[in-house]
Length: 298
Image (tube, rainbow, N blue to C red; front, side, top):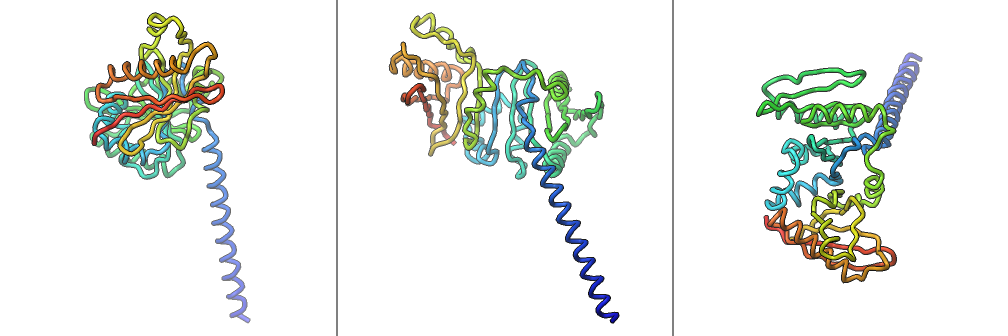
């Protein structure tokens, strides 16, 4: 009888342990699902100048940052700390960078594992001093002392980790999370839905950066009215490529769109001499699709 009782107790204990494990697993799944539902783009301040979405950090690291010409371009625009995230973390699945006049902000959707991994990376980079902790409302900010008298700040709220060297931008993002009614430009918001999230990178940048407004002066038939351009960025064999599309306007010939591709190529080469884009342009219905590629060296 004692043997049977012992077996019953062991069975009940095993069932209890299994129930607790299953319950914990279900709770963790629910937490993860609620985190992934948070839209990072809703917390980006409205004064954003450009966006870069990194959908596949491992591909970005392996296929793009290993190309010296491309690395030089990205490191000139992105703080090296954010690029080190790509190189060091195997857990990082995606992140978004927003560019502002005051600096760059990095956004990462995080669970506990990703948050802890980022904290370990930051401690590895900023070994000299412990971070300074401040609190505004319910948001806790951590500031790490860096070289040159700079401070890197970050916080985590509602499953989104945010980091920047600009204290002002960090506080703007925190305020944006509490008051999500104000958002970044609607045209930019629409463009990001056109992203191919299978591409390693997506970018939205202002037309004025390429000085395309001069097209109106050079060729009056061109009327550049859109403020932003969007593109998917990827590697194809030994070429770095961008892909995007524009609405087709009936009063313009395809040759005019090809002319615009040549102009864009010239403007980009003026900014980055190593990038020599050659565009292929074709029309399908109401859209004109463009693919521009440039050979890149290792």
